[in-house]
Image: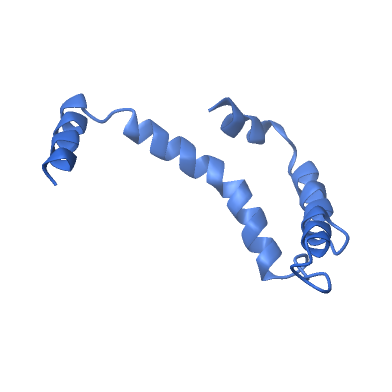
Length: 90
């Protein structure tokens, strides 16, 4: 949970610069794919919808994790035990 919460402590500008370094034509992803010879030329991952999807997932995933974790933390233990019994019946 500390890793999830720590993403809120970093500025959005730092996040954007980090994604530009990772997703750029000379970024980590393209260099790795080129070195493994999976691709022949860099894939455009920046300044298009793919880059937006990746960055928005990274920005909104901590909010989803925190909201789901708070709900799952309040689940009654008897429900968990009942679900374990159902798995064993299969």
